Length: 437
Image (cartoon, rainbow, N blue to C red):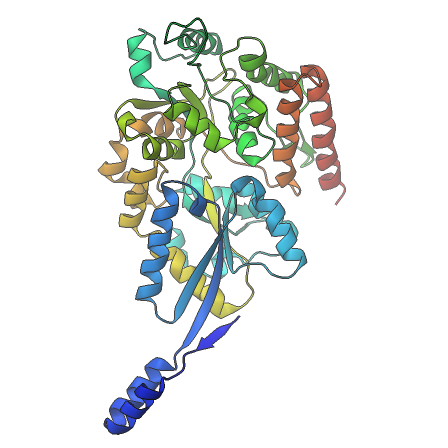
């Protein structure tokens, strides 16, 4: 831990000599207070509108807590896990990190996590929505403090749906039909300029986490334990192959996706909606804030629905969380102080209204300002059936497995069956390693 001791200026020192001894001693105590420097790694600090809000919270916290100074470094979500491995190797990890369940797995596997139960008191932990906090346990101990809730679903242009006289789809076939109807030539020049759906097709976590709800709703679990406690996988199975085909067919077969899908990351996908080139996006609720920040005229024109159920309807609820990595108790306490400040109910509700991200403290989630947001209706409905990520070692590799799989099919370098088989081999390797520990 690095502590900074403030120094007197010459004029202040001279002034303190003239003042009464008691006043001078008080000023000296204030000026010589030790400041705990706390480094923080964030992905949302780079996003709009989240970044401005987050920086404002950091600035307000630092002003209100003169003995703690939080500094933040931004890292793109798709690069976070690789960055953490590099920092751990050089013994330069920040005091705390904001990331997903796969981030926690990577840190846990490197023995770089402090237990949240050792840093926060039990009464405070009781205030979290159970489905959110459940995602951050490993071997019976809690390691993450939820930062915002995640619900997976589909954001869509409600006004376009109404204009075309379309009903909200409830089956995969209806979904394809709606996307086909939304894919059209809007300026009459004979070429398509408005597509049904934008797909995040990049090979990273941002793309993989948007493909995951598709495989889940096709009845596929990446990893699960059988009755004997042995790890198994559905990756590579008929269910997985069907999900992969349905997903990639949106681009390869039906043509309802804008060109260049494998180069479309999350920012590009949002831009396709804000520029009226796409009408839907498979995503988390955070896309609502990002879209409206770029195109305020779309306020009131967006709605959401759960991902299309095929064999079941489930949604992950984890979102992102704070993970404390430092072993230094003073830094742990300082990081905890900041996290509790950030997650005060009023801050959470303001954040939800601005970004569309779902509060994870019970009282904030139940607030009418959140429950009455029409853009969140489909996402909140999706949380009625929650899927909890597995705790298998090496789970962080699933993002690369999934994204390699769909990219190979999108580009035509592999058939659906070939890509599914390779993904299955990689996932089985993770099961074998876990079962042989």
